[in-house]
Image 1 (cartoon, rainbow, N blue to C red):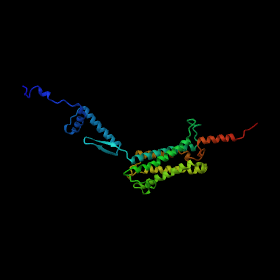
Image 2: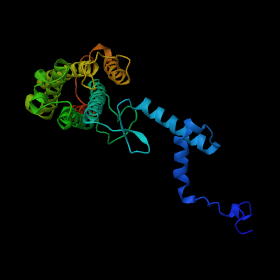
Image 3: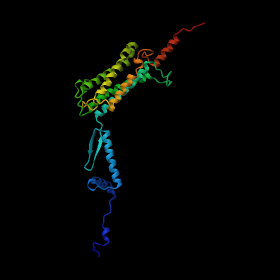
Length: 286
């Protein structure tokens, strides 16, 4: 009876399932899907969710690297120096667009004290200048990031004189020209008291040339540095085009900074000048 293989002890000899290895068994069953074809609902949902997640990730991030071990492979998005440089250029372009639009408001005599939002302490001219400083620093950082790329092949000389750059020399040269024009506008604005208001105003029109070259560079240049043809309906290109249209549509009366009340004097400075003129007038005694 003790050695009878058909006895009731046969069921006791079955090994108990190891709960600590449940996750590994699920992965093992997941790899055997093509052979078995049978899963419970939990495994099927987790496997489908993993496929959906990988599909969405691959669609949102076309530049992916594959990494993994012997049991699984996963997709992981890794931003390169070229990607970071492209984002920095878009940020700089947005800052310059906001600066130009604010400058257009100042050129027509907009005063936040007398007009909306009727708040004191808003120094738009100071904010306008700081946007220029931050935008110039961001625009300079935009090409310098390429020096950290192992595939771009840019040297420091190619950053400042990109006519002989490894890829797309013409669009890169336009970007360098826009950077130099922007630096000229920022420096002349900082030392505007040396030039005088009239001469500084004439020099300040260079900002429109810098904007035109900057927008052309943004539309023409390939953000991946692969000399691809411009895709004008791409999200990045549409962003650049929208910024250019905002500047073109924001020119008051077709002439920003001239005509009417627009003499390029900031609103707070205009108010101070008006108070000085009013105090200097002789009072009528009668």
